[in-house]
Each structure stands twice: as structure tokens, then as C-alpha cells.
Length: 184
Image (cartoon, rainbow, N blue to C red):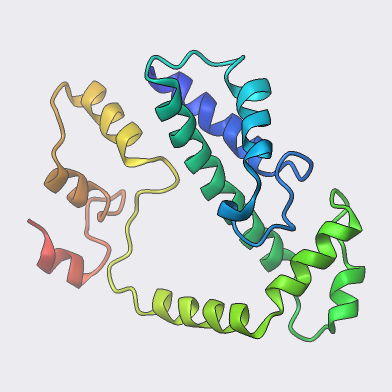
């Protein structure tokens, strides 16, 4: 798939992942979302608009994996935007986003307020704080970035070179001393 087409596909996947009718946020995990939702979107919104030159099952698997990732990220963003630790459960439920229906929001709030989920989120936050070597790759996936660099430079970019590129700032310096030590 050409680079522009893959960027367009990712954009469409992002729009689909945020659609609460197609992919309700009331499900706890992407894996618990019934396949009928995924099949309907694949047939009506993706297969009819994009030409996949690989095996259809592989294309569907990869696209649904991407939508699932974007769906999870959107749910986190939505929670971070509307959650206030000083508010009670009932106040959080009253603060329903405009585009959501109340039933989905109630289920989602109850899920996020479960002690096991709160503990997991706190643990993950602590793990992220311990990350010592951040990357500067941005939102573009490495394969697209590697292909853009190949077009710009005219040569293939290996894994070691991609690591260096994604751990340097725009001015060419490494993000921190640890990244400088690790460079290959």
C-alpha cells in the first residue's frame, strides 16, 4: 500500500475507533467486543473503500488490531479528560460527554472506578515514570517513517539507524545521557 494510502487508512481507522455506535466504549476490552461489530465495520466501511493487495484475512486482522489500539487509546483519553478524583461516582456520571449516551458512560465509569482497574492504572503510571530513555518518534509508525527516510535518502534504513533517529532531538542531540551511552 502506498504511503499516502496507509496514512489515509490510519486516519479512517482513528475515526472509526472513536465512533461510539460502531465500537461502544462500554466493553471492558477490545477482545470482549463481539466480532459482529468488527465484521460490520470491515464490510461496510473498510473493504468497500480500500483495496487490500494482501490476503483479506491478514488485512482484516491488521486493520482491526490497529482500530483496537486506537479504541483503547481513545478510551484512555476520554477518561483523562472527564475524570476528576475529587468528584463522586454520581458526579462523574452526570458529566457525560456530549457525543456519548448515558448507558455507555455509566458502564465505562463503573469499569474505570473498579479497585482492580485503579490499581492497574496506578501501577502502569509508576512504570511509565521509570522509563529512562524516551523516544522522539511521534505518532507515525516506524514502517512509514522508515519508508519516508528511504525516499528522502535513497537508501534502506536498518534497525540500528532507526533507533538512533528515534532517540535524537531535531537538533541532532540524543534525548538524554542514557540514550547517548546506548547508541549503537
